[in-house]
Amino acid sequence: MSSRIRVVVAKPGLDGHDRGAKVVARALRDAGMEVVYTGLHQTPEQIVETAIQEDADAVGLSVLSGAHMTLFRRVLELFSQRNAADIVVFGGGIIPEADIPELQRLGVAKIFTPGATTQSIVEWVRANVSTSVS
Image 1 (cartoon, rainbow, N blue to C red):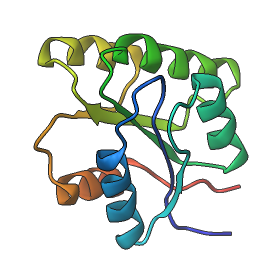
Image 2: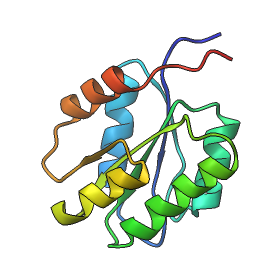
Image 3: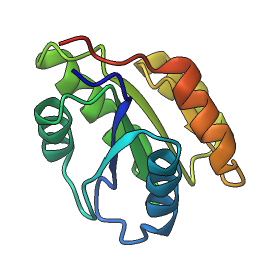
């Protein structure tokens, strides 16, 4: 049984820019976490399936396309339907400050806006994500 935090980093939707997601994935891995990067153009269904199969403790979504409300909502709905609502969902990208309270109300644990440091993301994940005990 591993006590390392397992994080799936995903790029949902049609957005083709993944540099930030790769930087975050590498920072989490360098900090000692197990990281699975799903690649570009993932559907919410694919992301949720990967997170469950990988026994993830958290999912980090990177959304730059403007479809963040729809994509985060769908991922959270699918986790709920699959009895996996204990998987922490966080994210970042080009997300207007005005949308963050609604995303948090839906169940997104944290949104990192442009300019967030990788260190602040690593520290937040360490402080807010506990490992599975399966």
